[in-house]
Image (tube, rainbow, N blue to C red):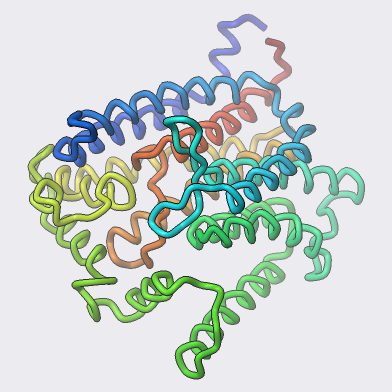
Length: 383
């Protein structure tokens, strides 16, 4: 096959949607931060995001070029390296906003839990595909006890992330886990039973905490966020402030928005964390309902292409890579947009490709690179 035919096999729709979201993120990060100079530089966040975008696109290219069969063979090593890195964060990580989630590498700060999600997708895809080859189709996932090895496999990195503490990312692990198990052939009733047991147990534990003082492995601010979601409007000056200001911003944008760099909640500093957690609120205020629909439409196109590639994959390993990446992005979008609209608790999960932050952008671009890789190698090609 010629290079021209290789290029025709690339899913350009998925690639275009990714570029579109990155570009939108850069524009609205500029709007959200141009009045927040760092070291006297009003363009600090904009320059940093553009630099990370360039690095991330190179990483995406590498993720496409390396045959995903090789990546899956390296899955156990990637999984082990991921565990070591997460342990190192707990031992020597940098604490920001009361959470020890970052590693300081010279002038650069990275968040290993973002990369851990992609590493878990690769490692778990390798693990499940390997079990299928050894035990046959379905990999014996029809009973609860059959899931125990998988639960342990995903539970280890999930627990390490939870200890940082990072409840939001822990929930992302759970969403990826359930999606990949379903795609691998697990019985839906078993997955519903597992999910129901965990959710019911968590609800009971919270009730017992407030009724009888039962200790919980959660920070006080995490509990406040959960209770604020359950009882919205109870504390608009403290734990409910973020969501309240976000709803004002989105609602005030109406159909077409107030215009770039013209949103009152954004520009007058009423909206907190507006270049990270609440970037969608900035989009809603300044681009309005139409702009928000365009962003969500691009995500929908992205997820559609990921699912399409997963269904067309030549093997289970490729299907799981694409499905796991789709689940990761979908859960992030659901929670972040829901958080901005006030229909989800505040968890701090970024909006993929749009939220300011190099680690998140890099991890998501690698995930899309893996999906493009799977789609490209439905055919026998040689680079």
